[in-house]
Amino acid sequence: MRSIPKPADKVPVYLPPGGSGQMLFTIVFIAILSVAGMQAAHASDVRVSASVSSTHIASGQEFTLTVEVRSRDPRNVSRPELPELNGMQYMSSLPQTSSRYSLVDGIAQMTYRFSYTLIAMEAGSFEIPSVYVSVDDREYHTRPIYMRIRPSGDDSHPVARHTRRSEMFLELELSEERPIRGQQIVAEIVLYFRNTIEVNTFHVTESWQTEGFWREDLNRSPTRRPESVILDGNPYRRAVLNRYALFPTRTGELTIPPFSIRASVRQSGRFRDDYSGFFDGFGQQRNVDLKTSPKSLRILAPPAPPSGGQLISALGQFRVERTLSQDVVKLGESVDVITEIRGSGNLGLITRPVFEYPASFDTHRPREVIERNERSPQMSGSKQFRDVLIARNAGTYSIPESTILVYDDARRRYERHLLPELTIEVVRDPNARITIAQNERIRLTPIRGSVTWTNANHRHVWFSWWFWFALVIPAGIFAYGLRAHLYQKKLGSDESFSRKERARDKANKLLKSTSRITGTKEIYGVIHKTLNNYITDRTNLPHAGLSDRQIVDELHKKNVSPPVIKRVQTLLEKCATVRYTPYPSSRDLMSDLSEVRRLISDLEAEI
Image 1 (tube, rainbow, N blue to C red):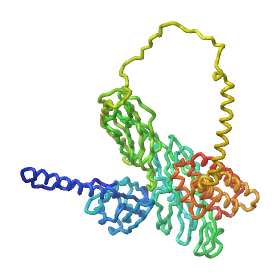
Image 2: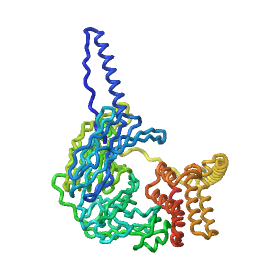
Image 3: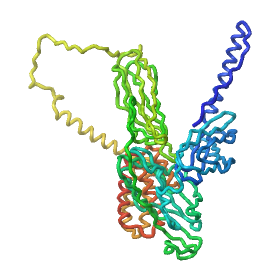
Image 4: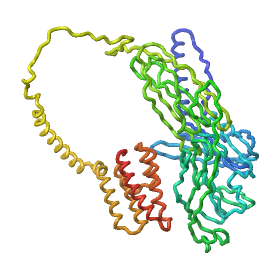
């Protein structure tokens, strides 16, 4: 987060008497406003943020603090001012610095990065205060970061349970061992391996079913390089393979099942231990199956909330704000009451707050928008609730203040967020043709007079059903033929339209060709080609030269639903990595063939 720059100092202006003095004052005032506006616009694109490689570490373990400055234009960035720390210590006050220029979709961006290595000194909950950075002689600061440091000899940590460590093993490391219901738990799948082992690739071999937990994928956060650690006096390399946010949905005993992978590794020297059956020669590459141990957690109920506040099931570090889309509205127009919850925690589980609205407003179905920070190592972002109100009477109305309770799991207490009173002024539109009646009932008056009777047996021909039937049928046939002619003409003249309309037929033909292929890996190649060609045909992209990542990004641009995008990404990744699997099973193959057909049907309705 960037800080708000201090306003420029006031400039004294000498005003001579008379009309010339007023003109001079006007000119100088306009010049000051122009300079201040340019400076504010120049500084508005600066973003300063701080992050750590992990918010939950053991005492004695090293981690990295990274400060980033982002801007559209090159800036004069000074070295950050490091705050004083409790429970942690800087390994060096000199950072590793880097700068990068990128151009994405015509938008330029400069990134300045400062990385510091720190070491955890003692166990407990600590805070890294705001880091101040000077950019073009303006001061900005980052948000504080909350850290949890566990004792190095804590037996509850999964790594500490190993009395005799293997040369390579997989661990599930959690940010919280005794969570409460709804609290965010960052789960990291960590691979430990000796320095003599080189890991080439890996892929997940079994679906990870976390029953009792709502799960969010955090693998889009910045990847970390393997770091060196000491375990029982032996050097190891530590690499985080996957990162997830888990939110327990009920209390009691819950078990996190094992996470299984198959890694392709190479050994730089001979050794004899549990894995000697896999490495039987110098430098030979083998596939190793690894899995984590199941993890049992006792989920506690949240403490009783204090009185005088409204609960919205928010657990984490959040701030709550409430605003109006506009303060003055015309009679009959809508106004949005926007409630925004921003921070890190259980964004997806937060419920809509309920407010008291004046009786002169009609309330409509609220809208809900979640914006997630994909680059964060934990679940963070913002969630908006927009209550739509429509005024029925003119006047000035107020929405009473309200207090929202948020449980801060870092401080282990409820935080109160006071939402101040809001005032809405409803005015009449003088140009409106139709006015809204206020407090008037509709009066029904009986019609009096003579009654005229007609003969129902005498009807004109246009009142007969067969007349309209005979008229509509030829017109319908003509319209259908004209539409078919225009459709065929457009298929022959418009290439992009033709690709989009024929994409599904081409995909079905490719899938039918798999019946003549005997090799399992070749069939996965056809599956990959089918899905790739179908998406590029529907989005009018070239077939060749696009990576799987670009295909997924194009689906994001087309506003395809996230579950469908996740299924597409999973299937593309499996097709790309199946060559590392010695013998893909026929059962998985049939399941993936069915999955690609379902994906094509789902994508047909969205792109």
